[in-house]
Image (cartoon, rainbow, N blue to C red; front, side):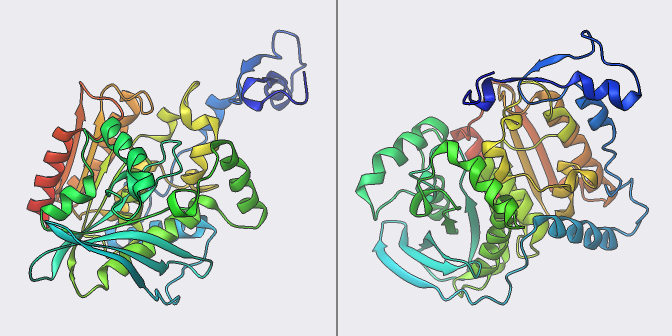
Length: 385
C-alpha cells in the first residue's frame, strides 16, 4: 500500500480484531478486508449502543428533570464551555432600506475567541416582531455562508454563487428574504469556515476537527455554542418579541436548528428540513457521514453512548417542532428517517403535545428545500408563533 494513497481509497484488514476479541486464531478467511473505514465488526459496536439516557429508557420519569439531565449530558460532550458572560458588543454596518425590510450587517462576539458577521433583516413597521434564527447548510461550498439564505446586497462578487445555490436547493428563492417579507426579523451568521470566516477547502475540514480535538475542544461543540449564543443575541434585540423566536435550517442547518432548540430556551419553535435520522440506521456502508470531513461539524465524541440523534432533538419537547425529509434524499435513508420520526412523535405524545410536532416525508423530493416545502414551513411558523 502506498503511504501517500488517499485514505478514502484504502482498504483495511480488520477481521483479525474480531477473532482476537473472541479468543480464536486468525485465519485468512477471518481477516476480512472491507472497502473504506467501516470495520467489519461494526454491527457489534452498534449493538452496544443502547441510548440509556433516552426518554422512556432513562430511570428519570419527570420530563423536566429528564430534560435537565439530558441537556447537561449534551453540553458536557460539546467540549466547549458556555459563553454566557461574553458581551455581544454588536456593530452594525452596510445598512440598506429595501422594499420589504431594512437590511444590515451585524458583527458580534458569540464566544470569547473571535467576532462573527451575519445578515440581519428587519421588516418595516412597528415591532416587536417574531424572529427566525436562520442556519445555513454545509454543501461543501464555503465561499458563501449566510449568503446561501440571504441575498448579499453588500457584495456583488458573491451574488452569482448565492443565486446559483438558491436555484439549486431553494427553488430560486432566498429563504431569509422571504421570511422578512412575511414579517419576521431574520438573523443569519457565518459558521466557522464559510463566507467571511472562510473559505475553507473541503479537504481541510478533517484536519481542522483533529486540531480541535488535540486542543481538548471540538469543532461541532464550537458551532453548537455559537448557535446557542446567536439565539440569545436575537432574543435580546428590542425589535424582537423574545417569546416568538424560531430556529430554521436546511441540511446541516437543519441539524443546527433542532440542536439549538434542544440547548436554548430562547427558541420557541424549530423547523428542520433534510437532517434527521436514527444513528444506527445512518451508520451503514456507503453513508456520506462515514467519510468524516463534513460530519465533524455534527459529531460530539461519546454522546452516542447516552443519546440517539432524535433523543437530543427531543430535549426541545413539547415546544412546536417540524421535521421534513425528501423521500429521494440518499443522505438519509428512509428507514433511519422513519425510526427518528417514530421516536420524536413518541416523546411529544407522552407529553400530550402530539399536535405540536409535524413530521413529513416528501416522496418526490431529494435533498432540497423546495418552494412547496418552504410555503408549508412558512405557514406553520405563522401558526405556531
